[in-house]
Image (cartoon, rainbow, N blue to C red; front, side):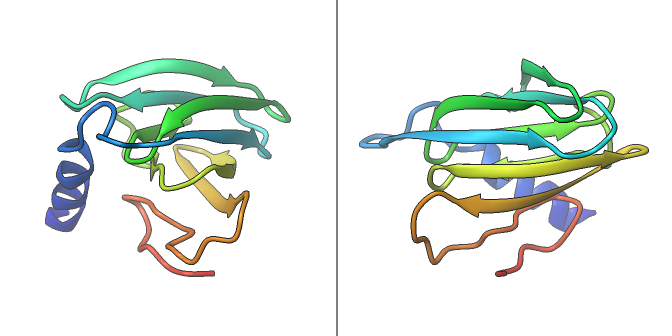
Length: 126
């Protein structure tokens, strides 16, 4: 639990638009049977609703490196929510099961950084 708090606190300490950051595009794809809620987390840690993504639907967001998004089946306070910190343009293919969200990150260009990030599962390379 402490690791989750530290990880999220680190993500939330980032500014809204990092200096010199390039515009990135993230495509959120709902591959599951549950509707997902998409939130952008501002620099104060407040969830800002961005979209409701129905099963089979896609939502694209223009954003910047370092921005944090959260996907949840129910509310942004859901313990099974997925948190993603933008590094580069790409797509996040997700599915919601009960109160948990599972996602797979695919960069749109060659990228050697972490491809999975979450507060509910350990970061790992694929």
